[in-house]
Length: 97
Image (cartoon, rainbow, N blue to C red):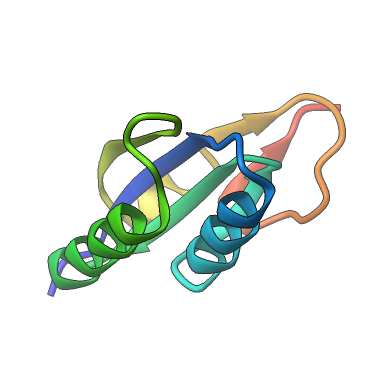
């Protein structure tokens, strides 16, 4: 089962939905910014994540972007460059300064 890397970004106005969505996404990946996650998922987990996102968010008020970054491969590790502060440092992030 191949894992694909997804960048998930969101803008949620309601504090309750915001906390619920953040907690949900923490179960799928790593938070790299306040409203940005990187998730390495097989298709079945991607579909589960999308389903939960639709249950939590309000399509009239919130937005969620899921970007497929491709298949996870060892040679792609450390291709994400960070410039500045990061609360956590997953192994696939290279710190610039």
